[in-house]
Length: 167
Length: 205
Figure (cartoon, each protein chain N blue to C red):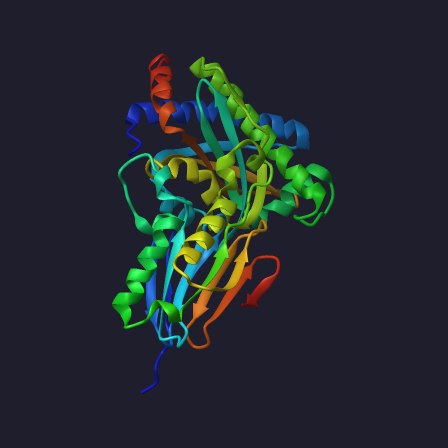
């Protein structure tokens, strides 16, 4: 029996997971950040597509933990625990996104600088959890599509102008 | 928070948009020295995910022109069209076959955005009697997910609906006008919805 490899697609403000040898990814990340957490043996991976840095800025009680960088990291850790007996010490992370898409508007509207904040908070939350970041493909001003493959734990990042690069 | 808006109110917004984009088309015709038309076939309320889908999916390449409406009524305006149309618009504006990422192409697109949104804002202010002004537009050509999401963020703190104004537009390719559809979004800040509602009540149906 041959195993067909699947790619799980994760939409905005959402989260997903996959098991080896499958892949997981998100398309068209701008200021959003994709946070991938996986164990060093590459048995599973969970990805959150975060839109905003911290849950404290929300204005209503709609609470979706995958939407905010600070609450997405604990959510990914809980998900990993459900997927297998992975010790936190063996977990690794890769992150991508957090671009500043509108250069001009970001000077008048702090909301437009959100990419940088998303990245900072994601790094901070991973540091708090003692999870090393193996690849950090963030910043700049280009949209990215990302796929993390459990075949080789690679993160492939595609942009319109530079094609696909592997991290 | 959902955008709750009545059919009558949407009809009035459609009327404003028809006049505003009509004015924009007139300005563009003068600038380009050729006939140019814009019509508004539909005004609806739509969700964030639908916006990305209407733009051809998260990875589809689009041009997005975004600016802020400020003053008595605060909103973000977003004008989105397929990236495939960028070069013909730039060529028409500048007479040059410029790469879309070169400076001239960017400024031409910004000017294009200025004309369209400027005419729209002026008409909006005129008809609603609201004192509004607009910021300089910003242009980005990239994947739809990346280009559109930043404009939705201020609203994402409250909910995820926006007012969509669907626009038909003439493209000028080799003198044979082709229609293409652009999406024009008005994203009122939640605190401004009531201001808009009151202003619309004052307008004749």
